[in-house]
Each structure stands twice: as C-alpha cells, then as structure tokens.
Length: 292
Image (cartoon, rainbow, N blue to C red; front, side, top):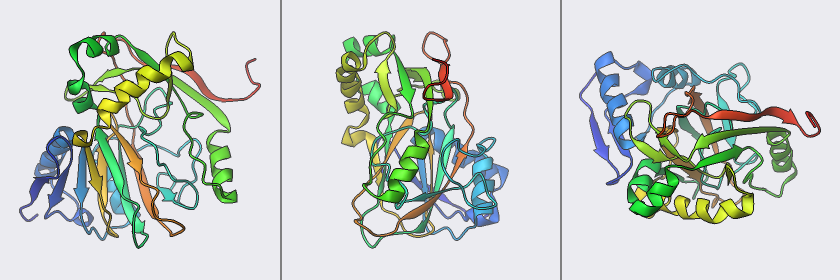
C-alpha cells in the first residue's frame, strides 16, 4: 500500500482520503488510521474508486457486521445487502439518520456513485456532536434529559410520480417506532451528540405539536453551515459516514435526470443516553389495525 493522506474538508466535519485504492483491500495498519479518522471526522470521502459491489461490501465489513436486507427497501439482485438509491424511487431531501426508527440504528453507511446527473445531486452530512457542543448551557441541560420517538411514518418526501408513490407506500406499509435519547453517547469515542433527524417525530411525554418547536430548535444547531460538509459526486466516489453522530441530506436539485448510488450499511448497537439508559422499541413492523 502506497502512502496516503487524510485531508480535512471542513473545520468541524469531513475529510477526504487520498492515495487509497479500496479495490485492492486495506492493510490492518492503513485501516486503523482510516478508522481513527472516521471517528474524528464523522464522514470520509474517497474519490474516483473503480470498485465492485463486492469490494464495497468488503470495505464496509471492516467497520463491523453488515446490515442484512432493509425491512422496506428493494435491494440489488443477488446482493441483499446492497441497496440501489435511485432518484426515480425516492429522493431523501430531508435531514435524517438511517433507520433511526429501529432500536439499533446503523453504525454507519457507505455510498458509491454509480450514475450521476449532469448537475446537482450533492450529499450533505451534519455533525450532531458539534451541534451539541454549540448548545447554550441552559438548552443543553434540557436536551440532556429528553427522549424522542423516531418513526418511519415521519418526513417521507413525496416525488409526485407513480413509481415514487409505490416506494413511499412500501416504506410506510408497516410502522416502526423506537425511543432514543436526544443526547446519545458515542459507544467508541464517548462523545455526546444530538441524535434527532427527520424520523424524530415527537418527544417522549409530549404531543407532536408540543414537541415540534423544541425539536426544531435543537435541529437548527446540528444543521448550522459550520457543522456540515457537502460532497459533489463523481462516478466511482465512495463515502462513509458515522450514523451514530451524523445526519445526512440528499439534495434534490437534478430535475428529471438519473442518479443512482449503491448503499451498504453496517449493523449498529443500541443507543445509550447520558444517564446510561438504552433505547427501546415501541412498534416493530406493525401494520395498521394490528394490536388494536
């Protein structure tokens, strides 16, 4: 393995890894440095990688066990752990943390650019740990005690197309809900971060209306421009973000052009709050009318 460089793309989040070919495998020494950078920078970018689905699976698998088939989304034929993120199916133009509506959201997600539009389609990633640090002391003391209910029924963007509506209905066909601490302690770094996003529908003990203003205030700190990184894709690019401390947003500004990314996720653990309590399931794949 030749020498490589980890170059920050912003002061608070994101770094580009240069001089690494993900198609040839990584030595333990190189991976250890990449993993350290992953924890520090929250999202890593790799330009111009000419790799296969198998190589993407191998890379993601270095970080932990791979997530099995997504409960609602279609996958690549013969590769149930690879999800084609196709702009004709859905456009996730809302800040969210992947499958945070389950008890154990993903550890992290890798994305690889397959087909890109002639313009637009960037991906943004926000640093929840930096957002937490930015909170005024008085607001931080409130956030430390809050829990939020995350559900797949929240913030599902509408494409206005027949295919998009079919995918949206499939995503929401069964109800998944989990309660997570609003301030999550990172299991590896010990760093606290705001754990919210678009799937966080309401605060425990409050109605959705009562919750929304406070959720919006807390989210505004995560989404500050200083706490975000924006990536303009080239075909073959790969990124990996730490789902335990970030949110991401797929910018829907590429009109009717095609955009396809391949997604592979890493199995996560159950979030833990500052008081040591762990997340819990409220609903796990329940169809409307069940359990009533």
